[in-house]
Each structure stands twice: as structure tokens, then as C-alpha cells.
Image 1 (cartoon, rainbow, N blue to C red):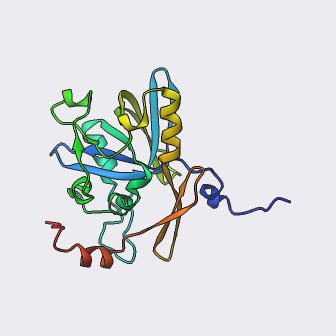
Image 2 (cartoon, rainbow, N blue to C red):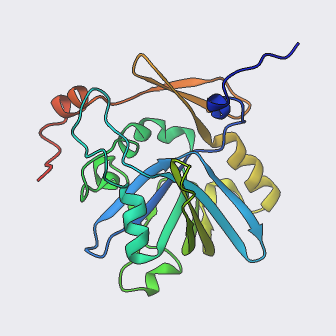
Length: 230
């Protein structure tokens, strides 16, 4: 038996993609990191990737602190510098998703706030301004912008980049098949569902886990001393 549902629930019927942390930088050299689950490679030669970026900044839960008309920092930075880096985190960084995925005001360095480490890219460092790798992540794709597609009816931009540099952590091994297997076992995906301040997280071939989702009050009250929004 098949059950018909609303097409708007499409995201619940597609297998999850690995969650990635995309790093960008502005012309003012302000670093940014954001979490994305809709990211795929669609060309092997030359290697290209695309990801979907919401056309407006996500709103913190129970707050109107972010301008509903403001575009995401990732999009704005890519428009300015034409570069981005895809960083693939392991399950050990699930708690960092709470910070990386929070919609901070523009100019806040999520990498620093999450206690993660900036690492010099292998190719893009040749530019005067360049985004960074996240050292704690397992794999990295350095990308130059090819095109941004704006489908008017859609609520996301499609951002396409050519991979000009690739690297991975030595802990994954040396054999390419082993690297792929190890990476598959370590990555996690955001299942797009939030319930009772829990973000559903799935790991391939392993049990589903949950990670807390920041609310403005919870986040700013507990970390007020650590975060200066000015």
C-alpha cells in the first residue's frame, strides 16, 4: 500500500545527504561557517559541486533578531569573493552543529565561536583573501564559484562551484576505497526535523541521534560572556 502526502514534505522522503560545514570569507576578511545538508557532486571531470542556500537568513527560534529580508552570509560572501570551501565533519562534531547552524548577525565568526581551528587551504591561499579549512573536519573541497542559479519560484539559490583543491585527514587512511568507507561511517546528516528543541541527526548504518538546537535565550544567556555581538 502507498500513502499519498503533501509534495511540500518531499525532503522527508529523500535519503539524507551528509551535513557539511561550508566556510566563506567576506571582502573585509570576516570568516563565516554554516551547516548545509543539500550538497552534491554532479560533475566528475572537471569536478564540480552544488549546494542549495536559502534565499533569506534563517530565523532563530522564538526571536525576531534577524532581518527576514537579509540574505545568508554564505551567499553574500560568495558573491563578494567567488570562493567557498566544503568541510565534511565527523560525528564527533555534532555538538558544533549547534553553533555552526545558528543564524548569527553578519560579521560573527562561527568557527571561532564553535572552538574550531582555521587551517590554511592548499590552493585558495594564493588569493589575497581566502576562506579557511576547518582543521577538525575530515575532508575538504576548495571551490571557485561557477554560477548561482536563481529560480524565482524556489526558496533556495543553487550555488555551483568547481573544485580546485581537495584534501582529507590522514586518519581516514591512504587507500581511496578505505577512505570512502571510513568517511561514510563517520559522517552524519541533518534530517530537517526539529521537535522540542531537538534537531534530528542520522548517521549512516548507525542509530539516529539528536543534538540540541539553540534558542536565542538559551544560547545568549549561557554564553553571554563569550560572545560579543558588537
